[in-house]
Amino acid sequence: MTYTELPDTSRVWVYTASRQLSEAEQADIQRQLNHFVKEWTAHRQALEAVGEIRNGRFLILAVDESQAGASGCSIDASVRFLQDLGNSHQVDFFDRLTFFADNGEGFLPYAQTEFTAAYQRGELTDESPVVDPLVNTKAQLDAAFVKPLKDSWHKRFV
Image (cartoon, rainbow, N blue to C red; front, side, top):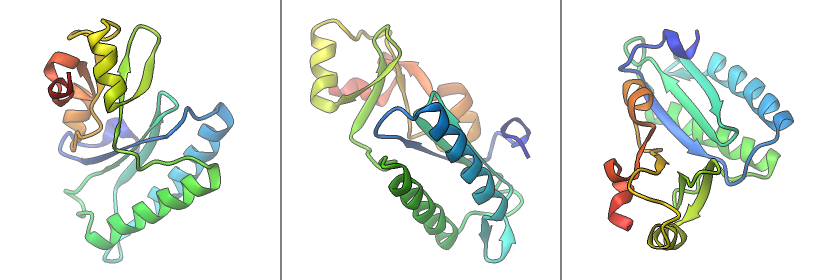
């Protein structure tokens, strides 16, 4: 199954890497992701799932829950997989305190205080694209993974 074959209602989780992944790391991680989603189950039922890396920084897991829903145990398994993956590549996929915005030089990581300061200095504007890792369906990911700062929850920090 490919990402484009998933229905728009598919459940999505977005994880951000604490640093840019090299091409070699991306290839290795994608290989491991493919293996994980192929074997991923919920209550012994195979999940129709896809994993992919975007922009060398964002790891996405998507599951068609119309076939079988991701359960607590299966979600725990994905978290353990990502923790192990992160440990083997010395990268953290669980930092939720870093924002990603495009200041004209690509998507750069910002701590909350840096994000606010960059906005106050004019390096980021209301039109600056920001990444919303809180999307939770494929439809939301496709439509609003990247959106103008003014239309995102990030706006409350500026």
